[in-house]
Image 1 (cartoon, rainbow, N blue to C red):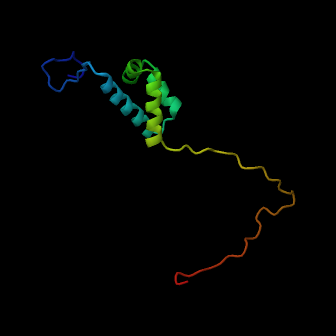
Image 2 (cartoon, rainbow, N blue to C red):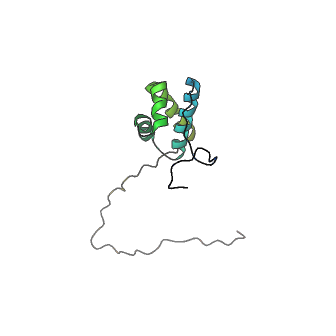
Image 3 (cartoon, helix red, strand yellow):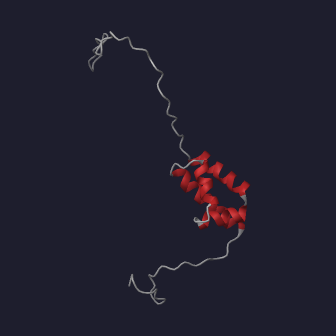
Length: 117
């Protein structure tokens, strides 16, 4: 029945139901949202944007209930616990190479060791 109208008697039919929640429940949900996206590697700005965008109804409602400052503290906590450090890519310093330089200079001395040494 994927193309028909939903059947209320079908126990496997997906149904969304909104239930009332306490402030503590909204805080727990917001913690889960922040943790999930911190573990995915999102930064503070991207996670904050999820809570500010009405398309993401759960995080958006949590921000309305809890307020911006509490959401920001939850995001900071999640990033502290589960965030990954982002590598910073830097350009290598420019080096002047003389025009007459050998493109394949000889290798320096090598030390050969055996497993017993």
